[in-house]
Length: 455
Picture 1 (spheres, rainbow, N blue to C red):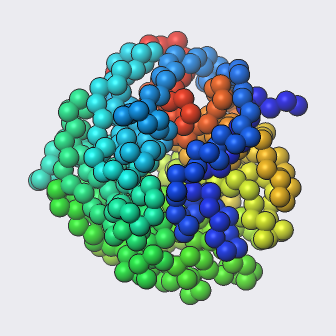
Picture 2: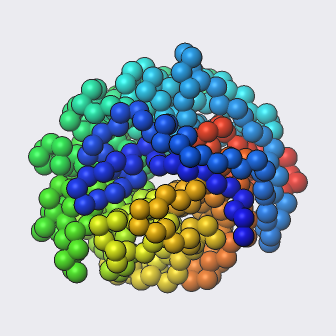
Picture 3: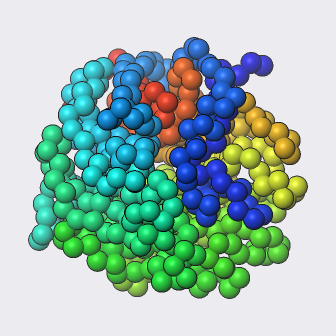
């Protein structure tokens, strides 16, 4: 069967360290060659395909916003977020293109109205999260933006905090900066506990780069966004005695890669879920954020390369969606599966004992990659979002996949959006619209039915 979308390449941090291949391996740094790797061997999908059934049978692409470079330098979209009728689109470019804000009053005609977090040359901004908060120090809409080095050991990374109560006029509030030896904050999350605001960050390999002075998983109190305060850091050696800051030995004596990649919380802000690559998804009780308690974790069978990349929660927080980002299985371990990364689904009613109950694999992700072979396209799953009983997945060359998880043990694909030359990084669902960020071509807006109501 001919694939609908094919695109060869590697993600921005497809770098090699001894015995490991990881899409986000920052040990070797980033020299800006990622774009050349994407272009090499690229094949063009010339047709946008949209399919849907059940509650998604009327999918329509209503907007395709071309992505313009800034200051004469092209850049790529990264993740995106929607809040109160505005889309916040992060970017990847060495000239710090920051976060670009689009008014979605008319979703068929998104209008760029501002940009922020674009004042730190030599960095890029992958993740943005916006929350409405009310504290003694700040009341309004707060944006947290991850900051990472474009090239190693050049500038500091960390997290920027902005007031976006007026999206047309974002105002910088604070900056939590990591040392130059750390590449920065990769992904992050904002949550609230009463009138307190917490920032949770994933800072890949911080333990390794600083000799344990800084950790990969950090919780900060940003109740006063102008003065971020670290209140907790977690050392993985507490869980895995063989942890080296880069790897650990699992129960089968297999060397596994380990670093914090992303983090979320549940809606109450009481439990945190940290995607720690081959160490699994780690669950913490953060009811007392200064003294979190480790509760449980997912783990991987001998033949499954870990790569816990990101997570989402369903069914009132009793179901965990774990996305594994695998581009090419570790060639040093022939026992690993040869397919692309896919979704694993866990029952976490007992958070101390996550139980694997199902998985979802796109048609293309099942393809078995032979050692030394470079596949046409990249079909690993990337990020998950959930609305009701529908799971939305950004899937690079596979576009956006939509999966019915009414029965989480039997996920069923019910929708697919694969734009021309698909390279989807982020996905977000806001009311009746699906937003997607395509690294090559910009912001996409897909309408789920005939309603035009957005705000």
